[in-house]
Length: 154
Image: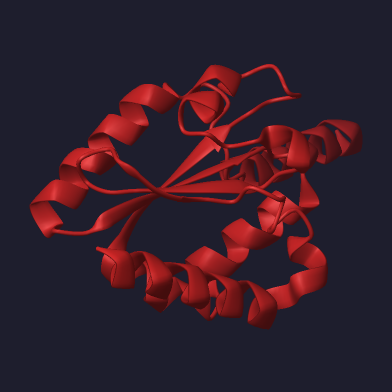
């Protein structure tokens, strides 16, 4: 009985952790982006597409920062955010390439799109690939600078 309870608890814990993973491994990324573009058009804002993976600590740090950290209000007001799973470098690589995102420079990698699906910004040099070292303040400063420059160019 103890073993069964321990197994059940382990299963429940694993399910809870899996539910918190930022990259849906079964998602249709192209459809998710189209949905975000439609919402962005209705709200007159832009889309941030984040390419990453659940195994990537830097990707998870960025996700945490943009959902609950200091960057959350900055992005929630002006952007639709879409996480795109790259798996173990075997998923959605064509999508990243279509937006000019050089995944070989590291993940997480970001493309900012207008609601008309025009690329406004891309991380070209792996700028967020060290998100854990950047910490919340570094991520916030980077996103604030990039989003302000995107807004200024529009």
